[in-house]
Every structure is written in C-alpha cells, then in structure tokens.
Image 1 (spheres, rainbow, N blue to C red):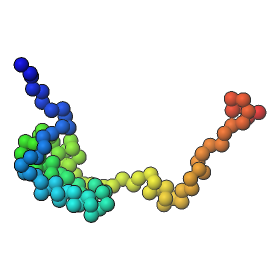
Image 2 (image 1 turned 60 degrees about the horizontal axis):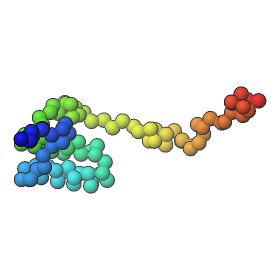
Image 3 (image 1 turned 180 degrees about the vertical axis):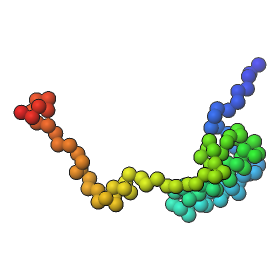
Length: 107
C-alpha cells in the first residue's frame, strides 16, 4: 500500500475550479502595468494568497510570515545601483590597483 505524503512547504494545489482566478488576473494585470515590478502590486498579491488560504488551496500561514501583515507598510529600499547613479558612480574607479613585485610586496 502506498503512503500519501503531504506536499512540501511552498507547494500548493492548482486552482482547477478558478476560485481565485480573478485575484490572480488582477495581480498579473498590475504586474504588466508596472513593467513586472511587483512592489506596486503587493495588495493584489496579498489578496490572491489570502483567497488561496481561505479556500484550502494552500496551507494556512500568517500573512505576517509572508510579508503581508495587517499593518504592514511597504517601503522600497533604495537599491545600490540607484544610490550609485545619484552619487555619479563611474565604473572601475573603486578597483584596487594590482600590487607589483613578487607576492604583492611592491618591489
């Protein structure tokens, strides 16, 4: 007799009946409108995951653990490239010059 194992964490059932299809489409539409930048679409993502949990299409999980707490505020951290661009970053200026001589001894 074969023993059935529960799915691994992060693996969840397909939505064959389309119970959360509209929320998924809203999220995908938001992604498309924002050039695949997920940050402006957090609320759509949250609604989609909540729908899946409510319909037992995925394991119940605290939205806080998924990064979607009830009082969570979403702030985009400035990425390193954006910071460099603002500071007038020039490629290669931070590269250390090779040391000369045997084993970098300088002579």
